[in-house]
Amino acid sequence: MKRRDLLRCGSAAAGTALLGLHRFPHHLYASATKKTAQDLVTLGRTGIQVTRLAQGTGTNGVNRSSNQIRTMGDKGLSDLLVRGVDNGVQFWDLADQYGSHPHAKRALATVKRDQVVILTKTHASTEKEMRADLDRFRTELGTDRLDIVLLHCMMSADWPQKKAGAMHVLSEAKQKGIIRAHGVSCHDLGALKVAAASDWVDVDLARLNPAGMEMEGDPATIISVLRTMKAKGKGVIGMKIFGAGGLRTRTDEALQYALAQDVLDCFTIGCENPQEFDDLLTRIPAASTRA
Image (cartoon, rainbow, N blue to C red; front, side):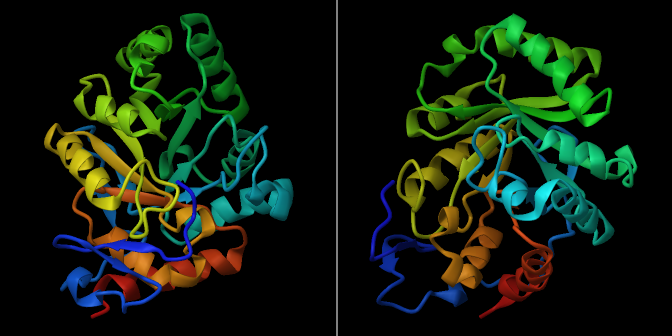
């Protein structure tokens, strides 16, 4: 979605409000219970427990690089992942596209494997490609098992046909204990609706923020689809919480909005330095109860 000067804010009830013109309705999203980045939540019916916050590693992630890698370098990103675990955030959001596997491997030299839940993503379509990726990913990460593997960036409703081979291999890998859950990340409304209906999808990574920035549709439409997902027991992870950076000046509102959504189990945010990460740990509980 193209960024707009006037940002739309989905309300807890019906309708929208313009963030640029009206005060964000904090009272509609305030919780009586404080929520933290370190809270443990269960992803749908997978049985996998993760922290409410996942450490993202792929801001502007392309060609096996990302802002995190470009800004902090090899050791900087691995140190930030370790810093997260040291502060109780034990969920890593990786991808082949981001090039973050070697950085996570470096972090695993310090962090025990059982301390962290590893999610990664693949562009594989065929059985051959998926088998090769599973082998390569585990080698790159230095682990014999992955927790969650997602088909990365579904852009059309026919993704189950295009990705049938990869899906078969991931199902097989789950039966063998090589992975614990599989699913998709979606960048298209049709793809998201198919993911909601698919029995194969255990976990979905979905874009959601109050302004509808970098999303497949307006917040109310997306929430409706995600509600169907949750009703079917799928784990739902929010992404683009800050609208791919477009809401960096409205972080409290964006966080409060995400924290109030019962359709999200948790969400991923990619910090680009230790100061941003520490600030986020402080802002999340403050945003959750702000009235």
